[in-house]
Amino acid sequence: MTWKERRNVTILLGIAGALFLALLIVFGMIYRQGREEALAGKDGAPDSLSAAGAPSDPGAYTALRWYNGAATLSFALDEQGTWIWADGPDFPLRDDTVAAVLAALSSLKFQQTLPAGESLSEYGLDSPSATLTASAGETEQTLLFGKTTTDGDSYYMMMNGNEATVYIVADTLVKLMQTPIYDMCALPELPDLSELNLRAITIQGPVPAAEPAEDGEEEGGEADAPAEEPERPAVTLNARRSNGEDQPALWFEGSDNVTAAPLLQDLLYDLRTMAMAKCVDYFPSDEAAEICGFQSPDAILKAEYAANGTEQTFTLLVGARMPDESGRYVRLEEDGAIYALATDSVDAVMTISVAGMRGAAAPEEEPGESQE
Image 1 (cartoon, rainbow, N blue to C red):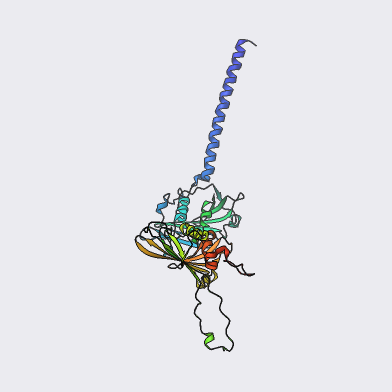
Image 2 (cartoon, rainbow, N blue to C red):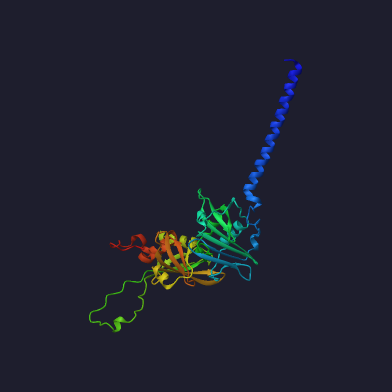
């Protein structure tokens, strides 16, 4: 092969390489465009809820209503611009869940846009598993969620009654909507019951068992009249400070100095660190309160303490154990709601309520009886 022939071959190979490179670039552009169209939906369909006309600002919304498969919850802004639970305006709503729903709603992206099939049941949209309606002034968006996709991480969704288009979206919104209303309760802040503030502690135990009726008492007589509740056994502990109110105290039960008793130290620690674990029922019926043990509480704690230069009293009613035994049902004297208190926070109270300051030295339990 002559040098001219080699030169021509080299030129042709260079041209072929350039054409091949140009084809790769063209195919890359076509692929990228196709991918963007797939993400945005067919025929330029919107790729997000905001692109479909919904507000992109979470602060634009004024009302929310959702059904999560078990309950329907409604929320609205009050005159002060604060979110409230529409069915319980006095409920102390902690609005972080509402804020999270609004943030997820305003940034909702459509992972895929599909034409609706012959039957909405194909996507579970004939009987939605969850619904969400959000209002922003006169604008309202209604989302219907069907079943999950095969990977379980996304949901089929329909929007504003348009049955012609189905979207696939992340499961973020549906998961947030599963939050029970009582998990959104702002728990009461308990007073500072550190030892320097405490003046006295009284712990009342369970009501003693009623004595059997005496022979000769007839039905319909005085024996049938409602009897007063027997007096509860009580332990009262008083703090004595000889060197000023801001000094550590000596603790006495009557004339007995119990300052060094481990049970007292456990009690002081529990009072100092006590905090409600969760709200169980904010508007309990009489039946619910009875089930939780408040017809006759197992223990009553009264703590006298100083706050802002005034004497205050904190009263806690301790009900039954929770079914999972993680704690006990409790109520505050001025609050009808039922809360949960962790077992560790009430152990010392329950021990003293039954066995007094003797604690572990109390007589052994009879079979079937409980030290708590």
